[in-house]
Length: 201
Length: 311
Image 1 (cartoon, chains in turn purple, cyan):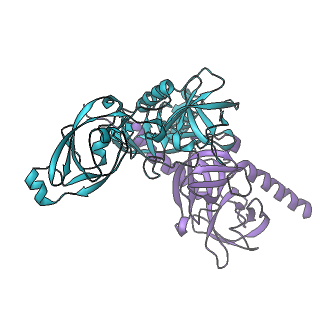
Image 2 (cartoon, rainbow over the protein chains, first blue to last red):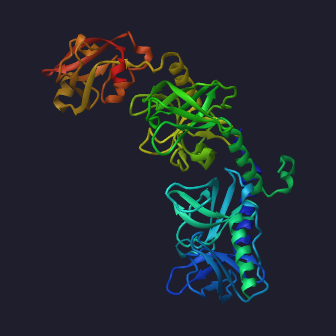
């Protein structure tokens, strides 16, 4: 009997492509004067974008949406220790990413990273979750550790579960492992940053 | 997330869920072993109270501890170790019920999706995903150990993942992964080899191997001599050391002799010698011939068991 290929393999490819497509539309590219580009994630439709502090270093980095629109963003807050920054662009119709509670992630789950490794916009990588914890020789944490191939330019881009919901923000490469900031940490940072801003206003 | 709801999940999400479940299932028998400085390594709870690990990761003879799935850390002792297959067996001081769900590697083919499941620092279950990149029949390691199948992996073997379990998509453990046998590449020692070696280690503490008491070096044989003596192979093995009172010494072999045949087969390189050093050859007399002074000299070798001091 000839070996048969079950339908799962043929269903996987379009499924993965659909998830990637959805992620791309909520991923932005961030350029800062004279530096290589990184990425950011659309957090809210009214222009709130989250990225790494090491990607958005100036007060007004440039944000490029996947559709080609370009904005000069305002840096609202940053935390160099946690490597997070929040920006705002003057738009009210953005497609925000769906966020998942990062404490529900299990080792072995598939993850997708979208970003601009080596400047290649909208590139996707597939990997799996290795664990959630602290990494040897790496400051800070906890990190979402994923066995996924990342490169410079993935920083600030989304790490999402197989259903496309955000579980982390790619921030660093440690050996063969990609390290992402868990979505729960991002949520905490953003709510503090936005609250602080309202109080200051 | 229930299996029954998979109809409504995307295929990718369903696969992701299955993989995480496979990791969780196999992870119940994956332990963390503290037997070297800095980073712990992984091991598999093979039978109640018995853990199998990659031998090269066991760097201490004493004060070894094993952290189980439930978080308990239990002292363990080395029950036996075998560098030739890179396997070590640890006995937990507190025997425990429960053991790995072992499946064979016979059905693993190139391209099959597999996971490496290990337990890392802080008792975190970790996983790596990839495919089987090579699968072939029985082979011998560079130290002469016999491994039932050659399974090479295309997946990341992270630090602490020598001793991790090779897990199939259904969550069954098909072998133990190590980077100690193929220049740092990820290799799986199949479950059948693991249980064969573990049984012998449990019974005797070591793997019995044949012994000749020689050290050799491969040399090219002169064309003229080969033609004259009708020798098939281009190379032979020159004897550079002969252990006093070892089998070769007793058989009358001398330093400078060139071994050209063993048990009726050509001896072209060291693998031809290792093929005759399995436990089944111990105590047997085998025919050998050496080149000495341009002539073939037949000898009879009685293979003994490798003494413990050089095991």
